Amino acid sequence: MRFAIFASGSGSNAARILQAVQSGDLEGVPQFVFSDRKDAGVLFKVEQYNVTAYQFSPKEYESKEEYEEALLKLLKEHRVEWVVLAGYMRLIGDVLLRHYEGRMVNIHPSLLPSYPGLDAIGQAIDDGATKSGVTIHYVDRGMDTGPIIAQQSLSIERGETKEQLTTRIQQLEHQLYPKTLQRVFKEGEAYQ
Ligand code: GAR
Image (cartoon, rainbow, N blue to C red; front, side, top):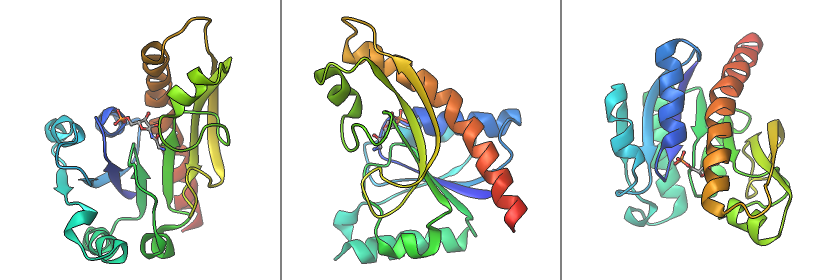
């Protein structure tokens, strides 16, 4: 499967996915990494994987539609079949959904539907939750709301800080995302 990664942050998931491709654990062909943020760590982190990186921001466009049209053009040029969101912190609009709904997946650091949106780990800690985890889901119009593909939970330890929980959740993400993508791509192939 030809896929692209969208990311806004440090890029640890993006790097892990590209590593899984290199090691043969994930059978997919990364076409490019895109970031909407110029200062995003992901742009540096993926340099070593020999994959094209693009960066532009919605601020450079008149509207969200125009921004997404620019993304869609890239996706079409690279004949991308699947879009993998890895810490891409924007709602996906109609332009991209029209073409990629059902072929776009996201990872979120909570057991959805609990704690959608920003700072899910902080939300869980502040709420005194005893359980959290990771969810991988198809993307729809909502914020972290699409059909769930995989979830893995962990217990939040008494007195655990946000930083400690973030480390454990990210370890879980790094295992679960490549493994789940491998399954999703294989299932996608079977339907082609
Ligand atoms: C990940 O924890 C991911 O689950 C989260 O952003 C982080 C990105 O980390 N995504 C969301 O919260 C989506 N709503 P990374 O840049 O190190 O991969």
